[in-house]
Image 1 (cartoon, helix red, strand yellow):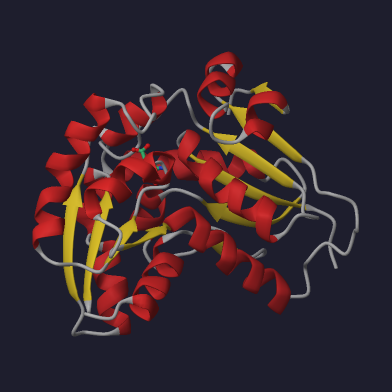
Image 2: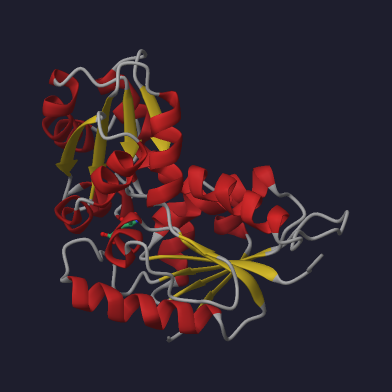
Length: 267
Ligand code: DGL
C-alpha cells in the first residue's frame, strides 16, 4: 500500500482525459497532474525536442512524491516506444494500453488510428497492434489541427470549424470500414461527440487516456501500490502557462480542474 500520488503529464489539456478516468476507476488515489501548456503542441515538433520536453516533465513530477508516472500523451508515448524513462517506479504511456484494448474489441480486424503528426509518423500504434496480431488492418491519419482546436476551447458538439476539420481527417478511416477507432491523442476524447457523430454508432471509440488509466490500475494492483485510504483522493494540477486559461478550457470537461487547486509553475 502506498499513499503517494500518481503523476500524470501531457503537453496540455488532453492528459485530463486520463485524470478523469483515474478519478472514476481509483477514487481514493491522489493525482499530481502537469500540463506543459506553455509549450503545447508537442505533436508538430521533432522527436529530439519531444524527448527533451518529456525528460523535463518527468523531472518536474519527480520533485513530488509520486509512486507511478503516466505519460498521458500519445505523442510522448510514441517517441518513447518500448523504452521506459524511469526504472524505479512503474511507468506507462498510452499506446500499448489503447492498442491492446483495440485488438481485443475489434470484430472485423479493421482499426483506425488518429493522432498528432509525430504519433502517426512514428507508426507506434501500428507496431503495437501488429505485435499483437499481424493480420490487423490499420488505417492511420494525422490530425494536426485538432489539438489546437481543443486547446482553444472549440469543443462544443455544434462547433462547425472543429466538425469540418474532423470530417476531413476521418473520411479515409470511415471509408476503410473500421469497426474500432483509437483516439490516439489524449486531446481527442474532449471532442468525442463530434467524432462519434462522424464515425457512426457502429464504430467503437477508444480513448487512449482512459485505457492508460485502466492499465495503471493493473500495474498498481500487481505491485501492491494502491492507496488503501477510504477518503476520496485529491488532485493537484500544475501548468507551465496561465492558470486562468487552463481553468477556462477545463470547465466543461473536468470541473475539478476548473475549480480545484491549480498552480502555474516553471519547469
Ligand atoms: N495530448 C497529446 C497527445 O496525446 C497532444 C500532443 C500535442 O501536444 O501535440 O498526443
